[in-house]
Image (cartoon, rainbow, N blue to C red; front, side, top):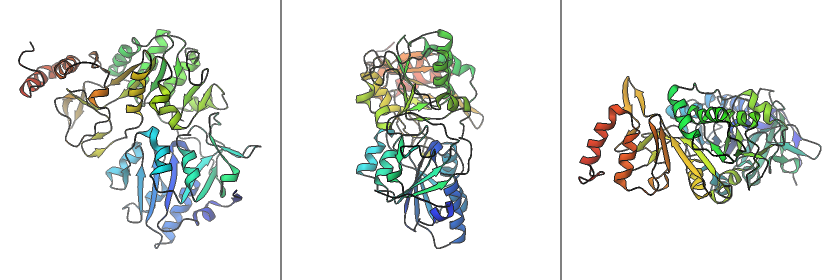
Amino acid sequence: MKRAVHLSADEAAAVVRSGDWIDYGTTIVQPDAFDAALARRLVAEPDLGDLRFRSCITMRPRAVLAADPTGERLTWFSWHFSGYDRKMHDAGVAHYQPSSIGEIPDCYRRFVPAPDVVVLKCRSMDADGWFNLSASNLWHRAIVEAARTVIVEVNDELPFCHGVDNGIHVSEVDIVIDGDGALTPELPSAPVTDVDRAVGRLIAAEIEEGSCLQIGIGAMPNAVCTSLLDSGVRHLGIHSEMLMDGLVDLYVSGQVDNSRKHLSPGRTVYSFALGAERTYRTIHDNPDFSCCPIEYTNLPHLVMQNERVVSINNTTQIDLQGQAASESDGHRHISGTGGQLQFVRAAYASTHGKSFICLSSTFEKAGDRRSRIVLDLTAGNVVTTPRTDMMYVVTEYGLVNLKGQSLADRARALISIAHPDFRDDLEREARTARVIPRSYR
């Protein structure tokens, strides 16, 4: 059993040694006071180096990266990019670490080098010796179990979140430091467009009473929640990797009661929450919400135990075979695999389940309008969801189901929901490539 000591952030940062693996955890529990202190060390001690960081969805700029902007003394790895991580990637500093996100706890336990230091922001210790991990459970238990040194940065501005294994016991902690009291970082909602609303209405029309929802990040999936609010469909459940504003709005409306779920009935299950202050206020000390480890929220053999699982996620490009590229633009990494494929599979395996991959039909690049539905994916693009797993695909022009379809039928279905300006060219390209045979008229 460890005996935690209370130190200043600068004293805690002194435990870091050259060559260390340092884990900053994920989302809203990444440290701020410790990060600033370690950055001061980097500035003051030019011999400190070869530091390797792991992170995920960084919500605030990192002081250590600002202290070493060329990446000569540290390397930043991320399991999933935020907008900030993407900027650091474009600058040559941040690097993606591929994984289906629900498998990451097992990766820490079996394959990933154990962290020398883990630093996580938590709420103050309760009467039973637990530091609550707030709305970011994910794989933090696996990191704490593996780490040489565990540091807790206390900040009671974080919401207190009920959940399964959602805390660190004082007996596991080496150092406790005071945080800077910063407010919980919010994730601004992207502006909702007419295209988003059209897609949202198409998907919402397919969602039945008693469905169990997983919804990914972005304006388009969020628009589904808005359409569901208008539809009045009831007895919805939530079993999702991410909890976002739209899902919380459905809970507040009374349409989510989790009464039809087999896993954690009566509870909204999620692994991390990102959104507006109203979302954090709603989940704070609310036993209707359960923040759980990512293997519980994401692994298909568990999720499928709920009936009518509905999975709704974005993609950026899909080819005429039905392969979805959702995380890169060629060799430029944008986000991450996340849980998209795991939830697509879980929804299909669930009784009466449905998975939806949605996208706008076009986008603009350098003033040039282009189709997101293409014959061939952009060179270097990563396939996030394979053609064999694809079920429903939705654009503002319609909804098609690719399950059980031949390549030719898939191509024709996808062309039917492409922007009208691109359909003739896609048909011609598909026939030239013999994706659609001559016999199809």
